[in-house]
Amino acid sequence: MFRRLTPVQLAVDVGIALVALLVRATMSFESPILWGVVVLMAAALAIRRLSPGLALAVAWLGAIVQMAGMQAPDPSNLAILAVLFATARYGGRIVRWVGLASAGLGALVSTGYVVFILGGLFVYNDLASYLRVLPFALIGAITTLGLSWTIGLLVRTWDNARQSRRAQRAAEQAVVVEQERNRIARDMHDVVAHSLAVVIAQADGARYVGDKDATDAALSTISATAREALADVRLLLGQLRHNQDEGPQPVLADLDRLVEQMRSSGLVVALEQRGSVAVVPATRELALYRIVQEALTNALRHGDTDEEVVVLLDWGTDAASLTISNALPSRRSAEPHTPGHGLAGMRERALLVGGTLEAGRQNEHWVVSARIPV
Image (tube, rainbow, N blue to C red; front, side, top):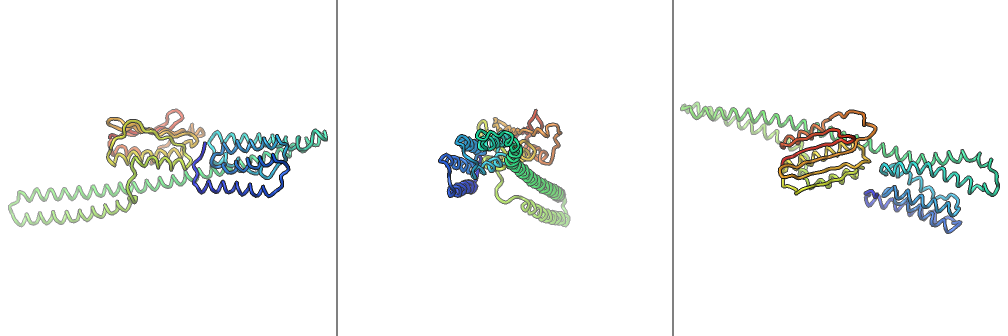
């Protein structure tokens, strides 16, 4: 119900609401009831990003009090536009569509209230005049309220697209780095394997040769080959260190921080661990962490971000079973899934530590299942 905001964001929202309240306080008030309406609208403005659903309810309460007290439209009603924007920009699926329904219903109610009640229909009894005004007033209300909600939805869509592009660029960069590291690893294997083969052959030959000159020649070859191999390995290791990230590699204790990062990006994540946590080698911890990281990134890019992503880590006696399940968006339900580099990378990480990984669609969810021996 409540979103996670930084202290600065919360201070800015409360500050804007207080400034709006103070500005309105300098104006005249026709009725004490209007004070309550102004305070409710300011409160809705203050919590619009913290809890869009609650802000919408407070705004509706203010509007009902205003209409029950027969109060005319007030400048504080502009807070409703900001609240409708927030429901589309920050709200979940239910809050978002309730905001759209509120825009339509609010347009009808406000138009009827202004035209028929405040317009004096029952005083002047001139139905034809007010029916001529009604279509224009209704169109204006729908346009104003609906536009606020629509702008919020467009900003949300643009932000999701930007995050998706950023995640895609990061994934592509990771693929390039991984490919380069694989190339270096192959080079190192070739250098070490070739050099050791030469060294072993020369050493074995020197054992059976009685000629001092031949022995000296074999030892010279061994020395030269070993020095050359050492220089090549140092060069390759230097390249590997250059490509590695600075600082220690993440471990399972960092999963909570990873989940919080994904939540701040708009993804709803539930992390659960079952069984007794085993002490595992660093390579297996890193494999589990990277698989969860890649799966959550894919869920943010390709999944339904309004539905909860479930991460389950079940510790067994001989292996850790990892399951990540996220809902697929309905608009893509008919499209086949095309495996990318991320899926191949997750499977490769599991295989390198002796585990297995499977990923695929199950009903309306995308499920990644990995088994890592402990």
